[in-house]
Image 1 (cartoon, rainbow, N blue to C red):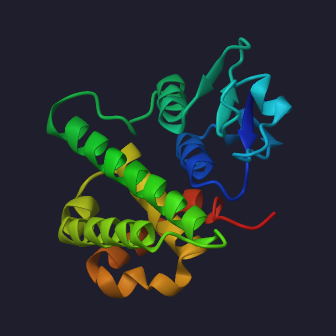
Image 2 (image 1 turned 90 degrees about the vertical axis):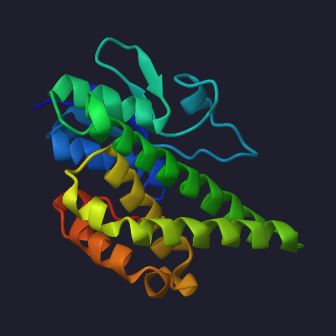
Length: 205
């Protein structure tokens, strides 16, 4: 099957990983042309900006040439064209999936800001402490909800949560999140066994 969509992509971005996990789960990876794109905050990328003025990834160029950006918008589009079930349409399942998605995306935002701050020559310690406090609070809540995560079908919420935990492994290995949230770690192990997560594990490059 020839690729019909272009995705500005990086092997390190957890937001790109979210899109790619959805694409694998929906059987759409053959339709994606992955374009290696570097999105640096201090150096906007003209190649990305031709499709997304914000110079951010992921950015999707659709079959008709139209563009979509923000990972969740791209994921929902892929789900719709594949007739998938990653976005529950109504009821409690819908709101739980969206809640977990919001929590996972918020955790990712905090982790990326935390990493950026700690890499500064003179990190602002109160800010570092605030990011760590929020991360520990998220892990505590999710550990308490691990059974519910395990009983729910795979949705955009659980995918996003898995990408956030994968980013913790990739950038915060010394943080030892599994010791803080053992039930969550057991749930995450089931995600890691899925081909969609194995094929999208973050790598340098």
